[in-house]
Image 1: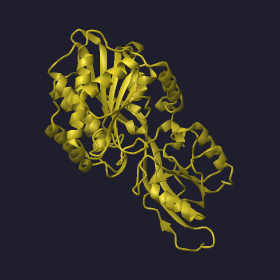
Image 2 (image 1 turned 30 degrees about the vertical axis):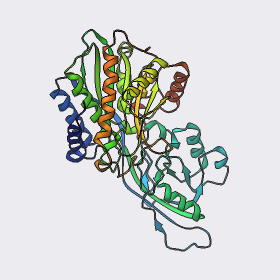
Image 3 (image 1 turned 45 degrees about the vertical axis):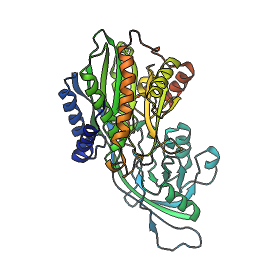
Image 4 (image 1 turned 90 degrees about the vertical axis):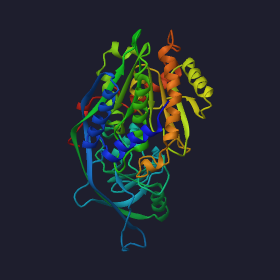
Amino acid sequence: RASSSRLRRHWQGLCHDIGHRTAGSRGEQRAADYIEAQLRRLRLEHVHQETFEFPNWSSSRCRLTVAPGGRGRGARPRSIRTVRAGVYSSATPPRGVRGPLAYLETGREVDFTQPLKGRIGLIVGGLAIADDRLRALIVASGLKAMLMVDTRAPFDWALTAGAAPHWVDGLHVPMAGLSFNDAIGLVEQMPLRAHLTLDARSFPATSQNVMGEIVGRTHPDEVILVSGHHDCVEENVGADDNGSGVLYMLELARIFSARRPPRTIRFISYGTEERLSIGAYLHMRGLSRREQRRIVLCVNPDSISSAVGCDQVRITGTEPLARLVERTWGRRNHPVRITRAIHPYSDHFPFNIVGVPSISLGRTVLASGGCWQLHSVHDNTDHVSAAVLARTIDTSADLIDRIANARALPFPRSIAPGLKREVDAAGRQIYRHPWSPGDFDYDR
């Protein structure tokens, strides 16, 4: 069984002793070292770190002020405190950019038919720039800058949204995010003039994946991959996102280290997940086709320990796998919402691209499918539950034990055709598969 006291000690180590773990940082490396030490203590085999280079980004200043743009011109500008630089944003000139604020709603083509040249746009949708069509509209519009609102957590505090390096290809427009409540206020007070000042730079950096495995006794070439990610976004310590996933992985490694089942169980903690699973994607790309085919299932938890929430499991596979999950959770009277769906925004998805089925675990509370503390300062150890996490670990251990010890694999190593078409589309559109860090334009 999972140990709540051990989980709390791991949270102490990751979130208090180490703390912030943004991609490419010293904290991320310290977290990787901590995880490696834990796997070695459990005497797993083939324990090592796999380093990789990726396009990193940082911002030292982001300031937004607004002032009335109609009859009230001349009033003192006021500062919007929840503004945060968008990851991979271009910088503004030293004195910033100024212009009338233009409300673009959700970024449909009709929203771009208004005069936009020289203006600063406001759009509802934190991941909007993942859309090639929208990015082309922004480039052609003549906008000086973009303000974006992450609707996944509609509150009055600041959020730091993740992003992918290839989402900004050809997009040299400064971007910033602000809270949902501040965005409502700006739209209601229009016309306004905005002034955005943003310092930012892109540069090559190094991150790491950490792994070890329990080699199967009789079916070592059939691999169950259990993963998490040890990086977090700016401004928080990632207790839930995804300290909880790392703890899940470490505790399952402890539980199974004394068993050595017939099939291999591989444990990986990825770096740089918050830049669209770069660590997992590059790890997948680095495997030969034979090595990829050895992986029969990915089990990936991401943000599963919030005290307030509802457990969710997404199955990207076939009906036999989905029914096995339903029976396992049902047998333990574990409340859960189980769906047959794809989920491109976590570390199992790169393996879906090459045909590996997956079980993606989360814990949501909002209608948007998000966690209330998502990517904010509230993602700390005050708002996680060892009991909630331990329950999910124990149910998952039951499932993995059944799969690892089955005489024959109890589901096909495949993804249902309808889901596979969705995976292929998301792989092309969201991941730009095949993508390489060498494609990134550092001079942008």
